[in-house]
Length: 420
Length: 128
Image (cartoon, rainbow over the protein chains, first blue to last red):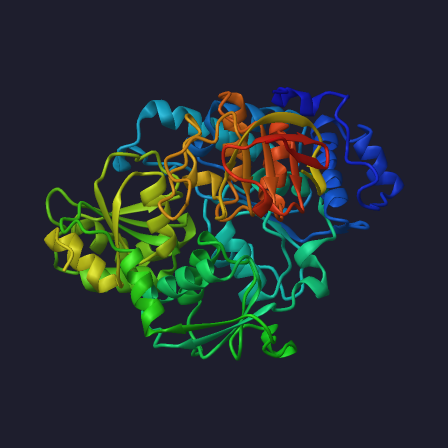
């Protein structure tokens, strides 16, 4: 097999002739090295993607969200990759960062080793050197990276891409961590996929014929829809107007289970009114599909030793709800409760007294991180959560059994140690 | 039998096909140290993609996946090549930075697990 280093050598051959991407003189100069090594490598990635997917040009973007921050995901291979880019690479647009593998200030609280912390700090330092704002959250739209309707952006973090496209009406392909960095360094992205009007049309119809109420219902619906969608863009009918919190959990679930990073909900999302329900493929989601989804997202074990809330990162309203439940209660010995959130959200929650309530109850506020990206494989046996996305990573990556339910059910499990 | 598609990352490789009819999430769904699939919804759960011609419809889930593919390559546990029905940006970027031959727009129902397959640029040849 060829070595990965080959990519950086001058003999790397772009897929010339596949697309018809035309670069400006400035862009060509950057490709030829006028902007330094990191910019040239970044341009190579953008040009390769543009040519594969038939983009005709690069277009300016207003912001970037970078995934691939936890040292647990990156390993030394990823850290080396980032350190190399940070040598002379600087981002040109507002660029924010996904969660790290630990609380960046208080990692020991979450049982993270100093050895891991040393590597994790190197990762975040590399991003800081590139000029990235080291927010460490999967919900950039809640803390200051909020694109306007129609903005072109280049985001990674599948749940955030789905939220930005669907709820905000901004335009992003589902970038991988490396292509998001590349776009940030150039300030542009190739114009293909979801940046173009014709690719944002719904391509199948979903009729929801069941009640969707709690946060976990939205996650279960996302599971059913993701599995049924074959990557197609849904036009969803039959859903009520709902909260940002429900929509962020729904999108995270849809994309985790195989759906598209763009969905339209009639009467709810901003682009839905431009379209009618497409003919052809139609999927009904009934009580039966919801039951199947809940069954698929709940394992047999009755004893719970880990309760993880905030996937995607908890909003201030969600933290208020959690604190409201926990006031005067105690998390059972032997059970760990994590409430994952962004640092600015934690600061507001602190002012409100919510953090004290959660910590007095024995819960931990996992700032800058979450169970998806922290190095906790094997530490817990059975996780309870409100999030269908969290179920996938708890099983695949952390080797946990899982339970999904609403806040009350999860917090009851934290207090009793049992899933009832 | 020869199938023709679109080059995602140019290269050639020959080996045994491992075919999944389900989308793959490399992050969370593949162990980067062993190359074993860890997704209970996958039809190849528990099998190793290392050293195989990995055939699957498209990628799903995490946008961290390119780094998982890169780590698999660094750990010498990567597939020899990837063949997709429709390769989205995530798998494409992984293939590019890890330099794994990758081709899409292939009718993957024509390939069966265990068959000897040769990938060369935009061509996929099923040898037996």
